[in-house]
Structure formats: C-alpha cells, structure tokens
View 1: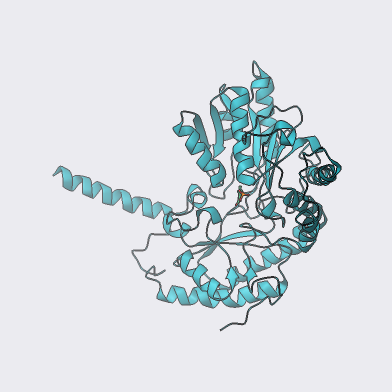
View 2: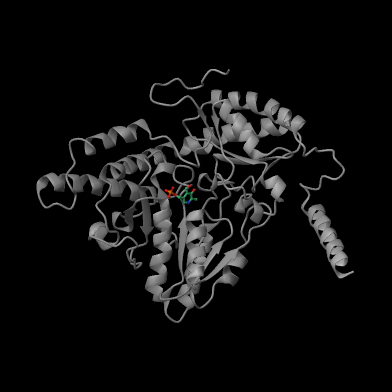
Amino acid sequence: MHAPRHQEKSRPAVVYLDNNATTCVAPEVFEAMVPFLTEYYGNPSSAYSFGKLVEGHLAEAREKVAALLGATAKEIIFTSCGTESDNMAIWSALQTTGKRHIVTTQVEHSAIMNQTDLLERMGFGVTRLPVAADGTLSLADVENAIRDDTAIVSIMWANNETGVLFPVEEIATLVKKKRLASCDPKKGPFFHTDAVQTPGKIDLRHVASSDIDFLSISGHKLHAPKGVGVLYAKKRTKVVPYVVGGGQERGKRGGTENVASIVGLGRAAELALEKLSDEQTRVRAMRDLFEEALLARLPHIYINGKRDQRLPNTTNIAFDFVEAEAILLKLDLNGICASSGSACTTGSLDPSHVLSAMGLTPARARSCVRFSFSHYNTEADIEFALKVIPPMIEGLRAMSPLNADHPDNFAYDVEAAREKEEKLMAETMAAINE
Ligand SMILES: Cc1ncc(COP(=O)(O)O)c(C=O)c1O
C-alpha cells in the first residue's frame, strides 16, 4: 500500500485536492483565534471593559475583511456561513423592495438553488438563466430577464464545480442602469453575487467601487474555520435581518458574534491578499501542468468550462467511459481527496446540475471529477497525483462496460443520444397507436 503523503502531526495523511469543498485552517489563523477561545471570552456586546476589549478585536477583524473588498467596515455583516449570506441577500431584497421576482442562473450553488426553489413554491417568480457549453453566461440574457417586478439578480462570481468566472461587475452595472431607469430606484432591482469561491484566488479590492450591492463570502473556503461567513452590503443599501434577534451587527443580524472565528477570518483575509500572487502564478501553473499532463497521457478526456475564464485553482475533467464514483473511490484508496460536483450534493445519484446545464450528457457528466488546489499544495502532490491517475483510468476503462469503441455507445454524443432517444420514442408511440 502506498505510504501516506503528508506525515505532519496535525494533518491527516492525504493529498488534498479538494480546496473548493473546504480548506485547512492556516496556522496563523489558528494562532490568532486561540486567545478568544481561552482568555478573552467576554461578550462583545457587554458594557464592561472585558467585553469592550473583545469588541475592539471584532472591529479590527471587520476592517481586515473590508480591506479584502476595498470596502469600509460598516459594509461588512458577519454571518454563520456562505449559505446564510446568500439567503440573507435574497430575503432582504425581497423584503425591502416588496417585489416578487428573482433572476439567477441554472448553475448556482445549492445555497441559492434550493432557496429560490423554496421561494418559487411560496409563489415568487424565478428566472434561471442557462449557460453555454463552455459554462459562460450571456449578458443579453441577463438584461432580457430583468422585469419591472424584479427585486434582485443573484449570479455567482465563480462556479464552485468548474471554476468558470462570470462578468459580475458588468452585470452589476447593467442591473444598476435598470434600477436607475425604473420609476422608483429604491425598489431595485439590486445585484448580489455569491463570491464564496473567489477570495485569495482573484483580486476583489475593487468590489466597493463597483456596482455590486451584495456579496457573500464563507470563512472555510479561505483557510479560516467553518461556521463563519460575511455578507457585504454596499453603503446606503437597505438590509433587513434574516436571523432575527438581538441588535448585533448594527441590527442587521441577530445572535452573539462567533468572535474567535471572526478574528480568524480577519487574519485569513490578510493572508488571502498576501498570497494572491502565489495563487495567480504558482497555483495556476500547478493546475495547468496537471491538466496538460493528463491530456497528453490519456485519450477521451475533456476539461469542462472556458479554460481562460476560470479560477486559477480549479479543474473539472471528464474521463469518458468511467464513472466518477469509481475514480473517487480509487483516489481515496491512494490518499487523494477530490470530488464530483459540489460537496453539498455528494451522495446524489443525479448528474451535476452545473454540467447538465452546460449540455453534457448524463453519462459524461457522471464521469467528471473536480480537482481544486491551494497554495498549501506542493509540486510533489501534483507529481504523485499524476503518477496515480493515468494507470487508474486505464484500469477502470479496461473493466468498463461503457466501451469507447462499441458501435452502439452514444452516451457521450449529445446529438446522437438525442436522436436515438427520439427514434425510440417515435417507435414506442407508433407501437402504442397501432
Ligand atoms: C459557490 C458557493 N456558494 C455557497 C457555498 C456555501 O458556503 P457554506 O458552506 O459556508 O454555507 C459554497 C460551499 O461550497 C459554495 O461553493
């Protein structure tokens, strides 16, 4: 059996190539948090100095997170996670505008997909925009979807499965133009972006000077702990609480702040800015080398998503004629962590909604694996993965009933699959009508 890759005391023995699912807590982040789990346990809302001291550190963390977005501290609302931030932006816009229509896409994370599904069942209108085969979005489609009763347009910045980036700043400007042209600009539409996958991977310091009204961040995607998130709300944008309770977060989010995690997130935001160039260069180079090596070594593999419009750390690869679940199982046996689809949908037998929206056949979509790197990955990790993966795919293909050369195998050709299905359907109907 293969020897574990990482033998550091504090980490399990894995080659972790699933950084879009979650990330390790950076040692500097952990160090910053410890005093707030031990010594400084005061409630930041308490009036005495033991509480005030903690409040001061909360304010410092808020400044650090604001700096990541080029924003001011007052524009930062701490939440419990990215999902809550997403839900809050949409809920708040529906409440403040009194309007009942949402524009979003077919490829959002389940935080938005399932919330908008629920709102639809409650009688709200939802337009879910399609994407092209390379995962990109048409600006004209966004423009045409906005109606007089649209409260909010919510479009993710970077797709968690493919890494494809949407031109959210352009979309935000378009939404603002529509708002200013409407009879009551206070009533929207507003623009929200789920930017959970972006901090530390792309530069966000121009967010506050853009037309983005709301933006979501999650701590555990940028080497801070799980259970803390941020909703950025542009100054003068009205916000109503989604979690209703005490007057914390200037009355915008009830609940005593998760101080230690917020302090950790502040430190993680600083580190994300420091490591940005590493992500753009070394991590991108690792990802590109990984893709090129696999493409050179294996036939019938495809990279999903527009290659020059992606996060630098993500690759989503279709390994035709093999089931992703089999690949993941074998990777796991070798200590390599990767995933098919989002961690929140693992276990579902349905093919990824993102890859399906891009037009992949169910068979190809079920053959796709996402690898996502971080600056904690080393060249040795990539070398090891490249040693393991090609023979593993060849072995699985040799056993696969989905034989590449079978004359009847249309599973990977959308047009042929559709034609075959239509022919079958016509024959069935003819038999019924006979
Ligand atoms: C794009 C995107 N949005 C939202 C979330 C949800 O974030 P959290 O796990 O903090 O609720 C995730 C997590 O995978 C994500 O990738």
